Amino acid sequence: MIDLYTWGTPNGRKVSVMLEECGLPYRVHKINIGEGEQFKPAFLAINPNNRIPAIVDPDGPEGKPLPLFESGAILVYLSAKVGNRFLPATDRGKWIALQWLMFQMGGVGPMFGQAHHFMRAKKDEIPYGSERYGTEAKRLYGVLNKRLLEAAYLADEYSIADIATYPWVARHEWHRVDLAEFPAVKRWYDTIGRRPAVVRGMAIPA
Image 1 (tube, rainbow, N blue to C red):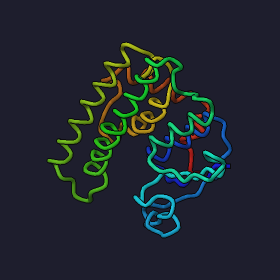
Image 2: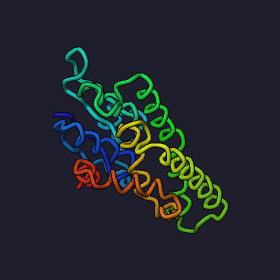
Image 3: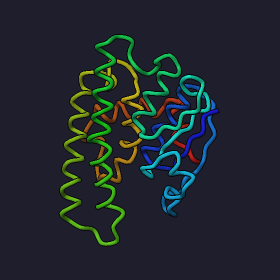
């Protein structure tokens, strides 16, 4: 049974969706980041960077428990644990999937997160921040839309790249983005949102 340390954020939901897709048994530990629980010593022993999500796999490599943080690394690890599911079998497909996973980690996550901060979290909105990160968020939606006009998914098939990106796009209203402006993204978003494992994973933690 894998222990998942998480909260209701896009990064947290990447991992719960992946666990559901893989059919791996897991136990949820809520880390309330609004109350600073990510700074408690017990959690810092798992993730010294005080960020959710993190996992502990008691049946890790070499039969030893493995604590693991960074959501992208966790997705790659879980894929390997179940025989490289949700990564294309071909070398070409695998690298395309990893390329789009890195795009999410380096672009979509940080920039959408900044849009959240300036558009929602601040008591008094800072127009410069909202404009800067809102503009960049829309640019990234455009990049996704261009790719999804070419392919059904970010790789040649449903993969960890889609699993990583979907929970961020699920907050499109927080970015003041109308998905009707990005029809290929909307088609992709609606398709993934109908997957039962995605529905279950997006509801974690309850």
